[in-house]
Length: 423
Image (cartoon, one colour):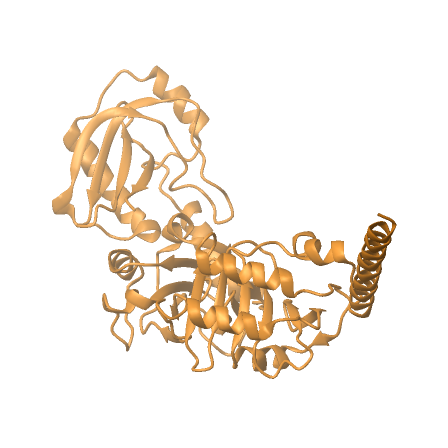
């Protein structure tokens, strides 16, 4: 009995010794790695937002993307979580040229739909096993000594076997035609970068045809249905003559610069870019300082002068006075007379929305809310009055359903506004 007790005590002491030695080695390992066991499990969650997608470039220059909550995505995230040994945003900084060099080789990149900065893990020539957080220019090493780059490479290679590869490519085109009398449509159909730069993303042929007609586009390269299989289009209409574009996996950066001795007219710039690029994250930097006499003299002043020169016998400019007069009026104009008056409105509307075929004209009696479609100055917003009047809505449209309505009041026979409609 005493011998058995002695053996049990020895076994217990041996197990305790083994446990202490194991704990000592584990503690020493994490101390060397400058990280505690607890932090090892939570460092990713605490410091890195899970990306909206993961992009992988293999050694053959093919690109793959793994969407959130897919098996491939989850495997990569778990591997990176296990791999991280430290995290600090005060690490070594990398230049833009160094980041460009990383993008030319195999890598994994965390991409975000928001303004979050991407993370990139080089899979080649990464002796320090770094993870880099990208900035507006360059980047910063936020983690080093990643423990399992080989495992990461194996996972992304296996997961990309049956995935669709993309090529990272883009092409810039300039329309041969300049654009006139389109300002109102820019404000309605485009994202307005500032008062002289407008932009829209196009993802199908039908939408492209719409903007082709709207902006009178003419490119040396034919835009076909096949282009949209692997590419998106970014159409930028700008008064700024020089546009520089830099395309990255996670964003597109436009820079606009002034040029001397050029004719300032609106031109169309088209970027055909691979779907592997995040076209929802576009940065526009306007470096121009177009001189006031050029900028306002050639466009804004001309626009406002056209408003000032409207014939007040036809177009209402003082809506309060008009309404008082309207309420005291007893006569009514005929539909035929309303259409004659509307003809002048269609001619004036050309400067705002373009010309529409008279053969498509329709007229109906309706209740009208007057607005400043014709009388708004360049820097003014749309405005409607608080009252309504009886009148005629005379419309014209094109084959795509875009058009314009002219509003003529029924008692005084004045044009009290208009509206554009369509896609």
